[in-house]
Every structure is written in structure tokens, then in C-alpha cells.
Image (cartoon, rainbow, N blue to C red; front, top):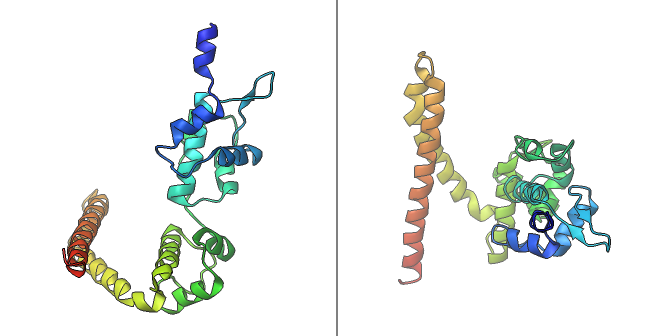
Length: 217
């Protein structure tokens, strides 16, 4: 029984070792912060040391994934995990990203001037009351590109190329959308996802080839 209890509980250092391969940025301070915000509640030993269960680790994995992939604010993640912790809560469907202007600025680490420029050049729809995951991806990417001297005004060609690729996709799935047969919409959706993935791979391959040319390799 004692050996089973030891295997059932982990120290914060052991939890960190389990998670760092998937989440390189996670730290002990981050785990403690999430505990302080009430997202996880590890048990305590009589001497005050934290004792994490496998359920705690899965909750942490869910929280870190939601932050990394969905950019969800902690309050949304906390709502998602509300109720008794366990596999049901951790496996619940992630709500769509809906950020306020202030939340977008904070999550993308850009200032108001940069966001206004993104809207002016059509990279993000102007006047939005809420911003989705795509808007956050654009804002975050442009914010990082600014470190290399590339700003929204330089990226209109990228937007134009994306719109042309979207036109190709629309042309390919239009016949499917016109069908009245059962399941035709699902077929069109599946085809659109596959075409989109192939276009992204083609774009990346062509860009990599061009980069090698620029570097003379």
C-alpha cells in the first residue's frame, strides 16, 4: 500500500520533468502561479510539500495546451475546468477564442499603434468588438516580425497571396457546395481542409527554396 501511495503522488519537480518535454517554457513558478489562481489544487504532505496526482498532471497539461494552442485567458480555462476535477472536465471541448481589444494587445504583446496599423492594412478586420484565434495569430506574428524590421505595411503581399490561395480553394470546392446530395457539405468541408493543408505545405516548400537561394545555398 505504501509503494502504491508513493507512485500515486509526485513532487512539483517530478511534475515539471514530466511536462517540460511538451511545454519547454513551463517552470516551477508557473505551476505555483496556476495553483495560486485556483486552477489546480495539489494535496499537501504533513510537512507542507505539494503532492500531485496523475489527475493534477492532466489538468496542468490541459491548461498549458489551452494557453499555448488556443490562447485562452485563465478565467476562461478556469470556467472550463469548473466542477469536480477529472477526465470529464479535462476532456471537455475548448470554447472558441473571443478576446477583447485589451486582451488581444496583452496576448500578442503589441501596442495600440501596431494593432491600428494591422487594421489599416486589412490584416485584421477593423472595428471588431471581439477577436478570434486567427486575429491573435496575425497580431502575434506581425509583432514578432517587427523585430526584424517588417511591419504591417510590408506584409500586404502576404495577405494578397493568402487571398489568392483562398480563391483557388473556393474554385475547387464550389462544385461540391452546389450539390444537394446528403453529406455534400461535409465532403466540401473535408476537401477544403485537405486542400488548405496541401497549399500550406506547398507555400512552405517554395518559401524554403527561396530562402536557400537568398542565402546562396
